[in-house]
Each structure stands twice: as structure tokens, then as C-alpha cells.
Amino acid sequence: MLVNVVNIIGNEATNTPAFTSDLYNQEETEVFLYAINKDSSKDEIFAEISFCGQIHIDFKINTGAQVNILPSQYLDKLSPKLLKATQRLTSYCGLTIPYVGVCNIPCHYKNGPTQQLTFYVVESNTTPIIGFKASKDMNLIKLVLNIEESPVSKYSDVFKGIGKLETECEIYLKDNATPTVHPARKIPLALKQKLKTELERLESLDIIKKVSEPTDWVNAMVMVEKKDGGVRLCIDPVDLNKAIKRPYYPVPSFDDAVAELDGAAVFSRLDARSGYWILPLSTRSSYYTTFSTIYS
Image (cartoon, rainbow, N blue to C red):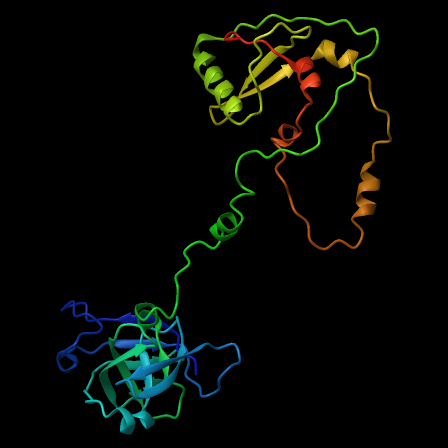
């Protein structure tokens, strides 16, 4: 049985709520339902609701329903006080769904607190339905407002910091390499504070470290403003690049890379903006990449 309520139309003139405890005095309202049928699906979820601690009935949990449905066959067991009501239950296609009245019955789920629920009693031999509000009040369902947060919470250790690979990178220089020292480049006054803030941030992330002793190599630093107002720091190792021994190996072409993807069905797009930062340099090699700033 499927009951998905899409709307409840109240009396706009009197501002009468759709449901009140005094059902006799309610103005006529119309409750729309998608459909009602007797068939059950294996994917449906049921909960055993207890009445008076002795009577147990399996209700189908339907978070799309705003009302609770109780077939009349259970009236003899529960003996509730049946109240008249003026609401019309209307199916999605416009057909009126007949019901004999409404009743308020105290019930609970397992060891949970007792709830006073309102049920629409229908004469057809259908599956009992418990709607969204009742399911939430009885803790039958849990609201998940943003499922995209779940992986971040579940694997929180993966999303901390920049990350660092275990293998250290080594830089090898040519035998005839001559060290060079570049002085700190001038920075506009308006950007000095941004530079200082970014240097402190990179140091806190263990991306850079201050050097207090003299070094043979000192590279120039380049600062670029980003569209979001931040800054990007780079070094300009023009002389160092000329002195590095290059490892020679064939670089895969685009066609080679595409061939490796043959038969693949799932692809991921990764943002590698901080990709080089996860490759730590050995202590010896790190001194080759020393750079100067107006602060140190």
C-alpha cells in the first residue's frame, strides 16, 4: 500500500489548521494522496507498533505520507473512539478515498515514549501506514540533511591537511654547478601583509621552514595575486634548473595514456593544485630550494 501525500489545503478564510485534537469542529479540508493499493513490495520497510502494551501491528513506514492509515479490520482489537471528520482523502487522479472516521490512539515503538497518534480508518483491506511526522516523532527514521558530509566524517583523517608521501625526493646537481644567490624582490606595500599571512600559513602546514644558517643557493620568490583576493607564492629557480641533473626516461604521450584507459568505466577528476606539496624533499635537497623574502 502506498500513500504519498503531496498537499493539504486548509480553510484560508478561518486559518483553521489541517489537523486539530477537536476533529468535530474542523472546517472541511482536502488531503491529496498519490495512490492506495493492497500490494506490498520487498523494498518496503515495516515497524511493529504496540498498542496498550498487548496489541502489536506491523505498519509500513511511508515518509511521503502526512497522515496515518488504519484499516477498519483492527477496530475490534483496539476499540478506539471513532470520531467524525470533514477532511476529504483524494487520490492523485482525483478519486475520493472513503474512510469511516478518525481515531486518536496511544501507541509506542519498542521501548520508546508513548505517542498519541491520529489515524484515518479506511474500510478497504489495505496495509497500515504510518506517515512522516509520526515516524519522526517515534524515532523510526533519522533525518540526513546532507549526505555529502558523511564520507568526510567517516574518513576524517584523509581530509586533514595537505598530506605527505613517505618517499623523499632527491635533487642531484651537475659537477660544474655554480651556486647563485638572488636577493629578495620588492613587494608592494598593499601586499606585504598578505605575503606575511601566506608565509605563516605555509609554515604551519609544514610546507616551508625558516632557515637561519647561510646557504649556497638562494632563489628568487614570485608572488601572484589570485582572483579570490589571496596570493600564490612560487620560486623562480632559473639558475638551479640549469644546474640540475635530469633523469631521462620516455614521457608517455596522450595516445599512450588513452590506451591505458581501455575498458575503464569509472573516472575521477582530482584537483592537484597542491600536488607537489605532498612530495617532501630530503634535508640536503631542500637547501637547494631556499628562497628569500622581505621578512627573512
